[in-house]
Image (cartoon, rainbow, N blue to C red; front, side):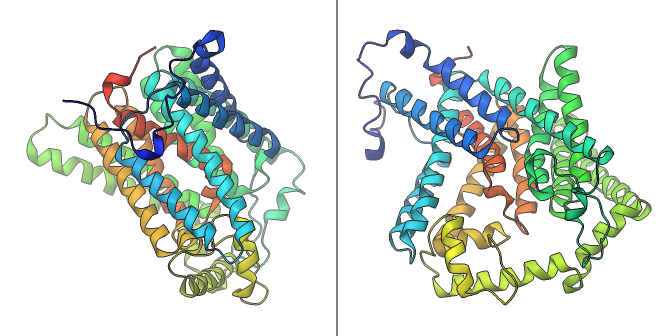
Amino acid sequence: MSAPPSPLLLRWQGCLRSAPSGALGRQLTLLSGLVLCALMAGLPLVTRSGLSLLVLASGLLWLLLALRTTPGPLVEIDRWILGILALALLATGFSPVPLAAAKGLVKLVSYLGVYALMRQLLVAAPLWWDRLVAALLAGELITSVIGIRQLYGDSTELARWADPNSVADGTVRIYSTLENPNLLAGYLLPALPLALVALLRWQGLARKLFALTALVLGVAALVLTYSRGAWMGLVAEAGVIVLLLAVRGTRAWPPLWRKLFPVLLLVGGAALLVVVVTQVEPLRVRVMSLVAGRQDSSNNFRINVWLAALDMIQARPWLGIGPGNDAFNQIYPLFQQPKFNALSAYSIPLELAVEAGIPGLLAGIGLLVANLRTATALWRGDGFFSLPALAVIAVIAGLAVQGLTDTIFFRPEVQLVGWFCVATLAAGAAPAASRDRG
């Protein structure tokens, strides 16, 4: 049976496959891996200009690889991403602030260039997954150490994140190199499941110690950010990992115990969590602020922003205002409540609907479901991407929980890690014949 024709959108790929390769052509895979490793390691450490250069280099490398490589079949994840890109184009064209929306579209395309290069690299050489994770954990480890050391230095700067109008007034929150506790927590949240899987997957004492150190210090740094959304996301990640490992580990058990054991684990974990929260004063105060409603200033601020975002969606329900924070910053003042300035909708579902309307929200949900379906299928198997799929499922759970009340995900330090997880699943779902273990 002949292979299905390539989608029209990808017909340009492979047009230079017959050209002489040269030394550069033969080393494109290695160069791509090195650039992506530099990007993963540098996410919390380099400047935004440095990140922009690495993102641009990744996009250019993908173009070179695509010109020399015949396009393979699109998996379900790829089709949803193309649909989201198409909606972003339409939303930009019909935006009330098209120039600002165009900037957001450029950012989206640049991040998708990184995703495409990661996907192509992992399809061609899956062993680069471990190298990219090692690079990510190196940056995460340095960032965690810097953040924890802030507790032993001058606390003047840390005090600026203590809200005197919050029920958690006086809480000291670290922010490390990212200058924002919530952003630091959002960056650490997807890195921790990857560190755990690296610990389970890597061979050799030195590698396991590196992964364990990154995991322990990362958890400590995340807790010390006192980001409530990230805390809930961390609990969701832990619950997902424990549940999935328990289900796999009890495959040979009697049916009754195979069903009861995961439930008992979750109940025991919930009881332990309740004990910790009720007995540790700083945690109890911070968690109690979740149920303080409008009496907590942070809650009150978000509620007012969410109400304004709902008004924005009601005003433009079909194609939104266009992608990016520049478009949001220009339109939001027309809907905001007095004294409640905001840079985003502080909720990923609301942000998607604001930027691309109800179709954009549905496309985002479709991509989420496609990722979960693909990850579950990979986890059930015993292939190269089985354990990475476990990490990705946990990352999705953690970021989804945090994303209900924040939009830290859209910052490059977090979003690019997210695209790495998506690329992992897309590469795992690609036809096995196109892979090389080298």
